Image (cartoon, rainbow, N blue to C red; front, side):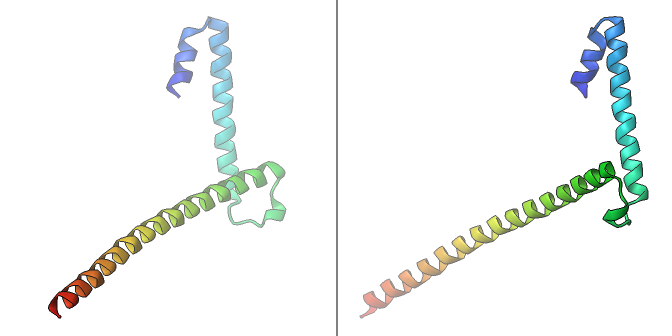
Length: 104
């Protein structure tokens, strides 16, 4: 956004106005897309236009991506905990064995 604002302020007058118009059109289109999806959020997929269906699927893909990332992070943390517990358990039994052998 900062880079776009910089580009908008450094160009010639006509080029600047064209860039501003394009930027405003993109913002209006994204706002329109978001409002259309918000109105039809609970509708079945068969009633959506192709553009709305693409937006809906993108949103669902983003949600799934976040869930998968969460699962991967939790799995990595679980593996780390298991490694620590395994090392502690192994160290306990090695020490117990050494103490038992020294006792006899």
